[in-house]
Structure formats: structure tokens, C-alpha cells
Amino acid sequence: MPGTKNTTKAASGRDTTSEVWTDEEKGAMQEHAREMKAKRGAKGKPDGEADIQAKIAEMPEPDKSMAKRIHALVKETAPDLTSRTWYGMPAYARDDGKLICFFQPAAKFKARYATFGFEESANLDEGNFWPTSFALTKLTATEEAKIAALVKRAVG
Image 1 (cartoon, one colour):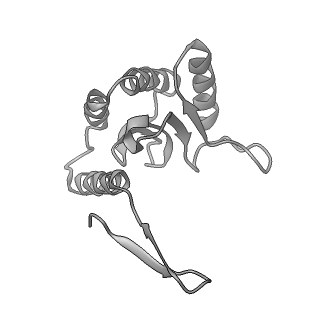
Image 2 (cartoon, one colour; image 1 turned 45 degrees about the vertical axis):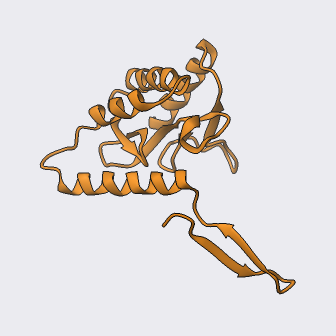
């Protein structure tokens, strides 16, 4: 619902109004609903590779170039991961469907940087505190090496 507002009373007794979801967040949720519907209705396995390639093709630069390279890195580093979309973004999961990592283009939520992130099923635990997502403004050989190492560790 465009323009949905959440109105609450502040401690002072005055009304405070804020947007519940941005248009970009609503769009991502709608994409996720379509993905789940396609997954349930698919005879056999949905073609995640084609879905990812289509999403990457829609991205503006520099997101598109980074997404293409990250896709290649993930496929080279962890060929057993299944390509799929997740909230309309390129993502990679184990055969059991548990998501390991994803690429969030900067343009998706009008952010100043893209994000490469990991989900709960990624094996990145490091004591009581560890990063699960990384900001990307440019993808060089240094970042590619770090991403490959993290993906390898995440699936290990």
C-alpha cells in the first residue's frame, strides 16, 4: 500500500508519523512473494541461473559489473551452491535451500554502496562476534580474493 503510515504516540503524548516501508522495500517483498510462488508452482526446479542473469542484466553500472564478477567468483569458488534470486537479488544456496550469500546492488535501495552478505547458514562464526555483510563501492582483485576466501569458508 503506497503511502502506508504508522502513527504512534510518543512519550510526550504527541503523534509521530513515519513510513513503515519504503517503495524499494515493498518492491523487494513483492519480488520475494513472486519467487516463492514460482518455487511452489514450478514443475521440477526453477531456473535460478536464468533468473539471476535477468536480474543482473537489469542493474545499472557499476552494480551490473560487480554482480557479474561476484556471480562468477561464487560459481568458481563454490560450484555446488545453487543460483537463485532472493528478494530480487542474486543469491546462492545449498541444495537444502538454505541461503549462504547474496549480492545487494546499491541501486536496489538507493544506497551509496552495494552489499555482499552472508546469511545465518554460512559457516563464518568467529567467537562471539563476526561480520556478515560487506560494503562494496568497487571490485578489485583485492576484494575478489577476500570474497572468494569468505565464500569458501562459508560453505566449508
